[in-house]
Image 1: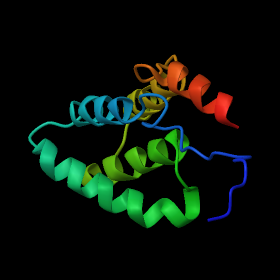
Image 2: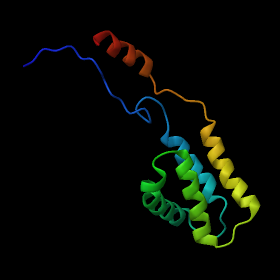
Image 3: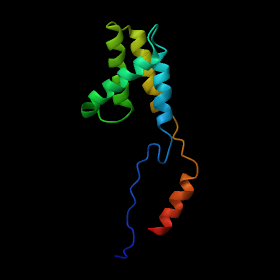
Image 4: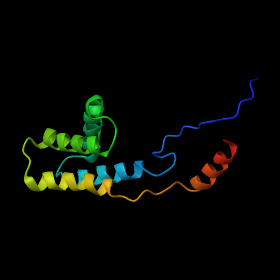
Length: 117
C-alpha cells in the first residue's frame, strides 16, 4: 500500500453539505397549486420528464428548473397569462434567495477532514 498524504477531498455540496432538495420539493408543491383539476402527481411526473429532456440544454440548477416549470405549465394549459408567468418566476426567485442551511455537524466534520490534509 502506498502511504501518501491526502491533498484533496472532493464533495458534492447539494444535500451533502447543505440542504437543497427540500427547496425543489417545496417549489414543486407551490407550482402544483397554480393548476386547477390536475392531479399533482401527474404534474410532477410531466415536470420530471421535461427536466430530463432539458438537462443537456440547461444543465442542473434552479434557473433550468424554473424554465422547465414554465414549459410544464404551457404543456398543460397551452395558454399562459402574465400573472402565471410572474408566479412561476417568483417560485424560482424564492429558491434563489434561500439562505444556505448547512446539514447538521457539517462544519465539525469538515474541520476534522481539514486536519488530515
